[in-house]
Every structure is written in C-alpha cells, then in structure tokens.
Length: 115
Length: 111
Image 1 (tube, each protein chain N blue to C red):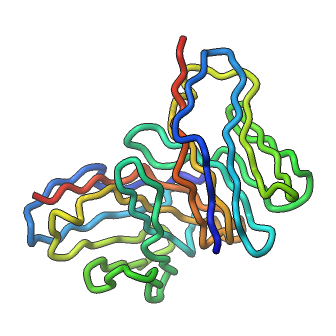
Image 2 (tube, rainbow over the protein chains, first blue to last red; image 1 turned 90 degrees about the vertical axis):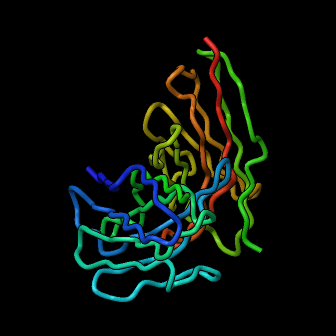
C-alpha cells in the first residue's frame, strides 16, 4: 500500500516552455500532497503543500506564478513549471499523506532538464 | 532555530558489518521523527517513524532507530548490512506536514 507515482520520470524541454508533472496516489486517497525540489547531493526543500479542492500553500521564496499546483482530485496533483529556464532544472519529488496517518509517502521523482 | 544535522556525509562499511547513522535535531517541542532511504534517481522510501511511546522503533529491512530525548538524537541502526542497503539516508523531523530534512548520509557497502 501507499504507492505514489509520478509522470514523467524524466523530461527535457527548451527554455521558455511549460512542463507539467503529475503526482498520483495509486492505492489510497490523498487529501494532502506535497511538492519538493532536490538539488544534486542536497536535501529536499518543500516547495508547496496542496489540499484537494483548495489553493496550494507555497513556502517562502517559491514563486507561485512560476510553479502552478493543482490538486483537482483525491488522487492527483499536478505541478506546472511555467516558462521554464535552465535554473529550474532539478529533481522534483511529490509526496502524499494517507488521511490520518500523519506520514508522507513519496513518489519516485521527476528529473527536469531545461536547455 | 529548527534544524536537523546528519554529521556523516559518507559512510563506508563492509557487508555484514553493523551500521549506525546519526541524526541530531534542534526543535522547540518533541517532533515527529522519520528515516527515509533514497536509491539513486529514486524517490524516498519510509524506513521507520517515531511519534510517541517506546523510544526504540523497528522499521522495514531490518532497521531500527532509537529516540533519545536528552541527546536530541534519533540514530538509525542495522546489525548486519547487506549490499542492497547502499543508498542515501535522510533523517526528517518536525510536524508531519512540515518536515525538516537533514542533508543525508550516503552509505557505501563493500563486499
């Protein structure tokens, strides 16, 4: 149980384009999902918390207009990197919580490379 | 300030040897405590967690961790390491929905 998937696993795009990353909870409903960014050989930095049916809560310093998060259902959250630039290249990881368990289960991550 | 310290950036052990990965934290109250493992290019897998109760916690893959309040530590242990344990290990503390991650310890296992 508690399987979280992400799609795509890897994406390469040109500078200025937008990229959408999907995060799905496969065997449970996730009221709350989280988006993290991980730089090479560094720890995870929380970008935002999304709750189904409401606006995401962004961490300080994260541009909400650049990183659009939508949590339209209890099993799907999406992160759209708008007008991506090379500095947005990173490993993006999502996580989800089984209601009441107070534990985050992580997806396999999406590696974004912006050329 | 709230923080998590994993003092060992890189640890190398022989297969079959015992392992201890250190995690120290600074937090205003007793936090929730987690250990996650990350294989190269992969997401994080939960090894174990501590919320309250018995301070020795058993996890998956033969791992255990002990919460020591007086030392603000939550060290991860395994009595006998397998080659497949080679990975990056992250300690995380805080509220379950506001985790603070350590910088990770990379474990290398020699046959």
